[in-house]
Amino acid sequence: MADDRDREGTEIAVAEFHKKIKEAFEVFDHESNNTVDVREIGTIIRSLGCCPSEGELHDLIAEVEEEEPTGYIRFEKFLPVMTEVLLERRYRPIPEDILHRAFEVLDPAKRGFLSKEELIKYMTEVGERFSQEEMEEMLSAAIDPESNSIHYKDYITMMVVDEN
Image 1 (tube, rainbow, N blue to C red):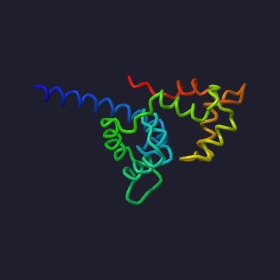
Image 2 (tube, rainbow, N blue to C red; image 1 turned 45 degrees about the horizontal axis):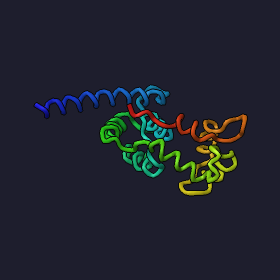
Image 3 (cartoon, rainbow, N blue to C red; image 1 turned 90 degrees about the vertical axis):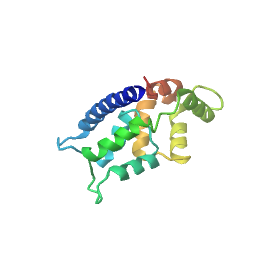
Image 4 (cartoon, helix red, strand yellow; image 1 turned 60 degrees about the horizontal axis):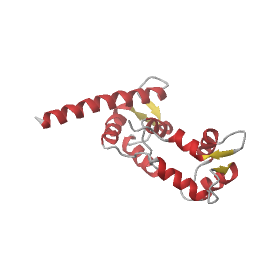
């Protein structure tokens, strides 16, 4: 009996995931031909609440790409892989408290903010470096135009994905 309920619960979850994946995919399927530009896959995956690293994203793209890459990803190949990712709860976002501690490491004076210059330096010179495009995208969302700094507590609240 429990097995039937578990299977039924999984089937409902799969159906809901399929709907969410299709909706996210369709936003970027500009030709309405069940394909999206490979460069949009990261955005689609993140819109589904997953936060893969760049390396994980490249692995995922390799899994859904055609044998001879065309620059486009077909929905039929993307759907089963993304469904499995969601079922396994892969690439979960980092919890808010850990993000906060990470920003505090960059702000030893505990001011509660980083200047735009500090943020650019840390994000482009240390660790897994941001590209120019990623940096511009982050700055547009994170930097307070009045103070020209990032008040990271507010930014973390904005970035954290609600798990419910």
